Length: 430
Ligand code: AMP
Image 1 (cartoon, rainbow, N blue to C red):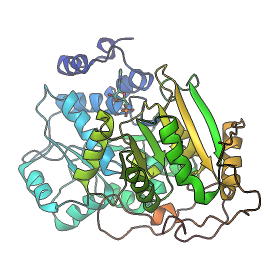
Image 2 (cartoon, rainbow, N blue to C red):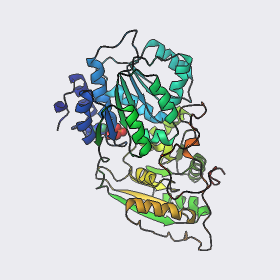
Image 3 (cartoon, helix red, strand yellow):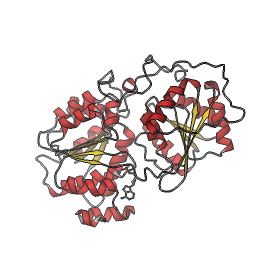
């Protein structure tokens, strides 16, 4: 299968060629012709499958082939993403693939000054990539008009629901004209996603693809049992003994991400925490320093890591196991791709044994345990309950607006092995 055979315009084919892609990925070869036909699509795929190009390329083509509505450059396409990083990446893709076209695109997200966004919108943009909160701020200030949107794309819908965006999404939907083409992407499915898909999509074509190179991933899993208070020391030991570079370390909370990054830096191991409280320029800088090797270790929470364009890493370290077993699969799925070997290390204390059991149940395999000499857990230490923040009450990625939805919506992906109190993680809050 070639890009030429998908029926794309020469301007798009040229941009794709320049990007160096030789052939379409699975989701691209399925989604591009379907979207070009004007069908709504429900795409089951995650970051790393090439899904951004799968919707961006046909979107640009459809926009080029239809004449815009009335007014000076109305907003014709709206893409909603859960995080600002993803918004930036999607918009960058639009610029790359649309470089031989004349569309204006922009990102709209919170945490940054609204005035430049207002000026850009006023000047006229065809394609808006937005997080829900700031988009609604613009709507309430009358600085955006969505009445001529022809294409609506909901990216990472599952994560949006996890983050409590359902009400905001419904508010945005109410602002759009009835006649439009809709695309929705989600890495996981549950009843809530299905309900949303039913209300959003008309007679959709479902396209499901596994992550690129899934199944044959060359990931070596290892679990290092360790006491909760000695995890940082063990991480430092591993960072030195394995000479960890280009490692993505996951924590459950941003406080813990900060603590871990600080501990690494104090020992001369360059590290940076990346999470929603960091300013946008800082996050972009952290990502580029990590990619260039200036920073050896990036410490991230799941929400911050989601959507980062880093899918091919030699090491993923679970400093803390995630509450949701599926997140472990997402985390460790970032290593061992494209035929290269990767290792997924988990530092697991007695408090997390039930999370590890959930993960192993989901993965249908047990993960090898290896006690590192000098870090054997003290058998007298008893498990303590992990107290967690509900994800939906976590930081909003789109700015300072109050959360639209304070609770986990019914039917949302619920953490397994839960049933525990819900408040700030005691260690994360330290
Ligand atoms: P995405 O799933 O959209 O985040 O894309 C994941 C990565 O795959 C990005 O770095 C893209 O640049 C890259 N990519 C997308 N499509 C292709 C393709 N057809 N061939 C090679 N790489 C691709």
